[in-house]
Amino acid sequence: MNNPVELAKDDEPPKGADDAGPVAERAASASGAAGAAGAVDTPGASDAAGARAALAALRAEVGKTVVGQDSVVTGLVIALLCRGHVLLEGVPGTAKTLMIRTLSQALDLDFKRVQFTPDLMPGDVTGSLIYDNRTAEFEFREGPVFTNLLLADEINRTPPKTQASLLEAMEERQVSVEGSPRMLPDPFMVCATQNPIEYEGTYPLPEAQLDRFLLKLTVPVPSRDDEIAMLQRHAAGFDPRDLSQVVAVAGAAELAAGRAAVRTVHLDPKVAAYVVDLCRATRQSPSLQLGVSPRGATALLATSRAWAWLSGRDYVTPDDVKALARPTLRHRVQLRPEAELEGATADGVLEGILAHVPAPR
Image (cartoon, rainbow, N blue to C red; front, side):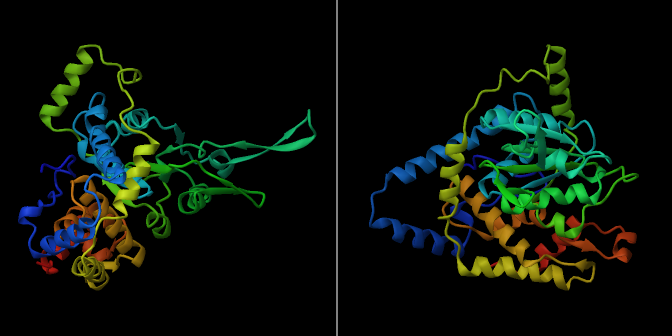
């Protein structure tokens, strides 16, 4: 069966059930034994299949406005399935904002965008109490964080105090104002962007906040063919501000069904041990002064299960783990200064770890 979605071009897609090895065979037999007693076509199974097909159609729908970023769209869907948040890194002009706007329309979700600037205050994001002269009472006015998809544009250009205002929203999915918690809508995802080449006047995100992002996705410059296709669309009259041609192919119900299905994906104990071995290897790497935390290990497990489900399987293979290792872990490690001087990168170190840590067979 062909995978309905693909990861980044530099991330090898996981292999299918026929060539995944004994681990996949054990997982397939275990899941088959578990489902043998019940009906094959249960309502839950049909809901999950319909949700998978709807989410797979997102790539084509977003492709109506954004060319050559299928892998990033896949990462965003994985984050939604895992109830996580995404850090997007790419040079200006690679359609990051347009991509999130189109995704929200294709999912029929609410979307808001905040331009993070040095003078942005926490209340500008979360909301604040406003005195109402007519009632002589304070009334809470919701900030832009009360939405389904929040685009935090250039998050590293605002001071740490404002950056930290997102922490509670990202982790607890609520906002506390004057001691009163207010729940955020579900689904809720923060998509934060940052420019990888301009650091003057910026406030780098602390490691504790970086660890709250499920994935860090690199938004590449399109290939030559994709860029030619993009110019042809603009020459034909394409307007990036007009999303009327984008239709909703999925919604909150499909996301909920997908999340429920992902939680049932089987995990072989040897694959779980492989995830732990990879994360422990980052803590022992001579090139890193900070390795992956236990939260990072649980994140890699979650994204691997989501990718396995999107690929049409109900079990996780080592190739699923390998495919998601870089986007899930690259922002959770910190290079030593001497390694940076030698030209080392987080992705390069992770590649070496993936090559040296033996995968279960």
